Amino acid sequence: MDHIFKNLRPGAHIHLMGICGTAMGSLAGILKSMGYQISGSDQNVYPPMSTQLEKLNIKLMEGYRPENLEPKPDLVIVGNVISKGNPEAVALLERGIPYTSLPKALGEFVIDQRQSLVVTGTHGKTTTTSMATWVAENCGLKPGYLIGGVPENFSLSFRAPGDSAWFIIEGDEYDTAFFDKVPKFVHYRPKHVILTSIEFDHADIYQDLSAVMNSFRRLVEMIPRDGTLVAWGEDQNIQSLLPLAKCKVITYGLENGDYRAVERMALNGRNHFCVAKGERKIADVALKLFGDHNTLNALSVFVMADVLGWSMAQVLGGLSSFQGVKRRQQLLGEPRGVAVVEDFAHHPTAVRLTIQSIRERFPGRRVLAVFEPRSATSRRKIFQADYVKALASADHSYVAEAFDQSKIDPTERFSSLQLVEDLSRMGASSHLGKDVDHLIELLEHEAKKGDVILLMSNGGFGGIYQKLLKALE
Image (cartoon, rainbow, N blue to C red; front, side, top):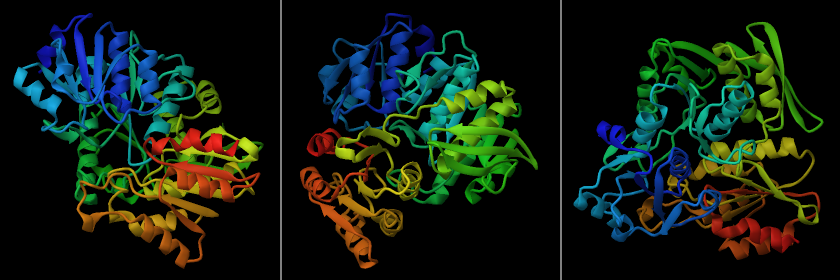
């Protein structure tokens, strides 16, 4: 397929199937900025990616149909949400149109010979990638980038690399496409890698933790000898892979690691900590993001920048001025004195850490946690018990019915009712929401001035965000 990219010229028509995925929408923007004619198709369209595509004047077709391939595009990029039986994919194969996957297109067409900084791991990828990109920008590197969300410091989730020697990308372990069943990050030419964490996730494609580990093992072994691996040294799963690396390996952590975050405190609306390298304190960091996990995210970026020799003054300035990412602990409004915060958390570890972070950010205020089981893993019962532990730390929890479970075996389905019952049995206040309107009714009844409502979902959540703000007003 390599010749496809070499033969494409600006003005060629590239069509993206599954264009509203965060990475796909970002790639669409990169290719448009490189001079290509872009179209795309998708379903279940929702912000922020749909809004971004509208701003870019990219033609968006609702639903997957053979006629979306008319007129015949020069190249089709197929997203990993597309199955081989998808009617548009069937037409693509029948008509003999050249096609490839998003990761392969990025690796060969965009990253190419540039210095690639890949941020990967089960948790924290989007925030850490956004942070690393803003720090690199602050250091004057003007990197190209692709992020699975929209950073507040930039207006878009992507930028073509132009003349920059750097490309920074969020490296997902999810598979590439129905015709290329390897983790996405395999195609990203990883030279410098931040590895934040490894846990079991993506139950729709990985059978168990061992299968997930094999993917990350492959990544670690791919990094060239002149590359860099910055890894969370307190994660046992990560520790088991470090001996496989040929490159320079640097660890970080709160208690252990080559670099540590010490003397952390929340003060005057900021998360403050010192960076210790060995026994020596080498820097003071002030963040607008809270919680242990965001501290580790920032520390990983600091470590990578220090190893690569970036200006420390500019690195610290970048961390201090980092504004966060849309849909990651984003304050949507505070009607009637009730803070409404949106977050992408869906894995039980992320749910637990997000609640912890919100408590740190809003000290002394009640936290009303609202959770929609929507991801492929959370809709299955694998983490049924783990969600009890994760949500128990909220003052009140509200659980939505799981999103479309029709394709999941009934014996494997997650039960929102059981979660609520388990929480109630242990003395925690928990409520089941039959639908979005019912959830809003429950929240309106309970929420008082000074409370924080934390909405957690990795999807549109039935438009609850604006509906709730309007109801509270």
